[in-house]
Length: 180
Image 1: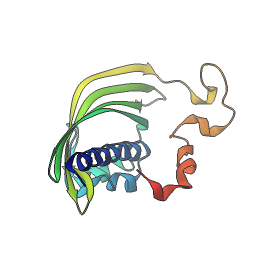
Image 2 (image 1 turned 180 degrees about the vertical axis):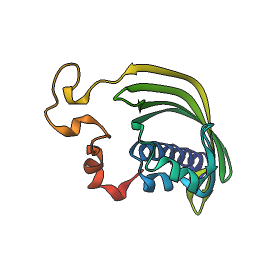
Image 3 (image 1 turned 90 degrees about the horizontal axis):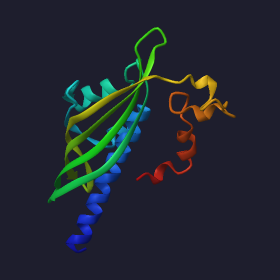
């Protein structure tokens, strides 16, 4: 295979890994997360720093006060160097935070992941991650899901998102072995 094609495939494998990790974090799914990091990796989110095992124990099951998250992954700048790569990925992450007394707030963080990827046995995964924070916004009180959305009731409970038995897990189970 020629080098430009190999580089294109490497970049796609890296982007798939980043998307798989975001999906795993949003669902607190240890298998997705473990498939994205090398076991000897380290992470530093500023509010947490540690080994992969420590990170996994921190993010799964996650804080009870954070009922829902959603990570929007933006463009990734990828610099390949043989079997390693330096990657900067833009991220906007939503978090529903329970401050107690039914005072839930919708908050959003904008920032960038600085990842070092390594290719081992043909598989690209994160060897280290550093999160840089660019901005934070507290949007205030969250809506009451039991009321539906925009004043209209939901026709079925699966529309209420990941915090209520995420329907997308069932949706994708048919092709579970064909993961990106």
